[in-house]
Image (cartoon, rainbow, N blue to C red; front, side, top):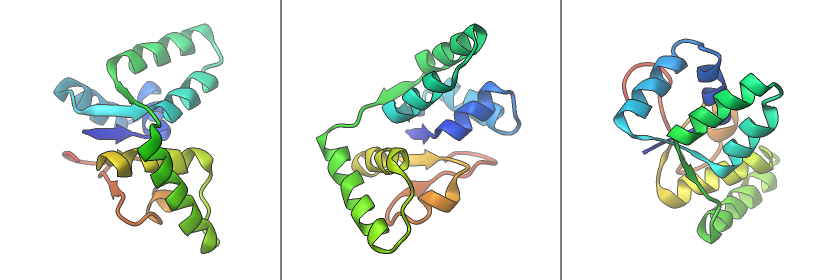
Length: 131
């Protein structure tokens, strides 16, 4: 399973290539998920009624992964490590990383600058085939 970050899903909603095609392919294959954190980000960013409907439709097609205790512990571990090095990335990104690490899932994101800092986190390729 591949976990789509908010930036990937937003690009898809806006019809931006190549992510609109990648998201469509992963949805067709049944391999795309996102996190409850990304769900929050998308829903809170939808300002118009049509935007809300698009977001709801997309979210309805995705598996939405929760922040459970294991993910919270992994996120806390990542936060302590990165902040001790002066490389903090923000609460939402810690939680997203924790969810992916706990479940051993690949994260598809354009925000590689933040997520590449996290040891053991697998990042998907944005172009070409899966992951």
